[in-house]
Length: 99
Image (tube, rainbow, N blue to C red; front, top):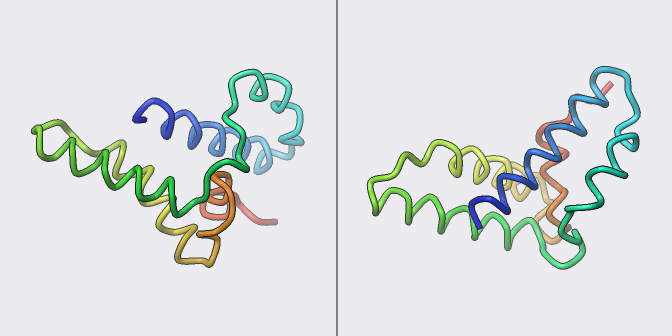
């Protein structure tokens, strides 16, 4: 799950960077689509809970939790903004620069 959640958030970061730089994020879609987990199968709340479990397990085992904490933070911000029932892509709202 650590690889899965981090990879999903990496896609969101990449799309946000493209958008902020004036490039249509859809240009990345053909590449992302090949390894993307279907967004409609999970909600931000579900993914945030998964991230929280990874943070807890990392801490329990004495493993640095900085990366899963960052992922958990993104989902937490999306949930706090009212996107909890939306799909896993809703942290886009937390990372995207709005023009």
